[in-house]
Length: 128
Image (cartoon, rainbow, N blue to C red; front, side, top):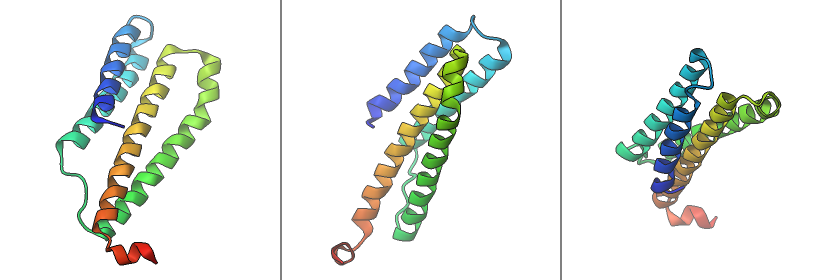
């Protein structure tokens, strides 16, 4: 995922949220608004903070955490997708779409961490 795609995901989510406003009850709209805010915060933190650790143990731990988050996110999407399709509620589709955007952010984060780990690991350890 590129930076441009992250920004596009946030913009699309905000646009889609604006279109949902009249179609869903306020409580359900609040959950969608919260999802967009969380996505925007996640993108902002990835782009605006120095979040990549510098040592191999820290990178390894971070990679483990991101992989676990990806696994849990995908599992939750898999668990609800049939119901979302069956119910056909626009706000549920929206939240699943936003969750998939979070998945792309996690994949970006994992790629960056793996690349950083490759740079801090001595070449002799990669050849064994």
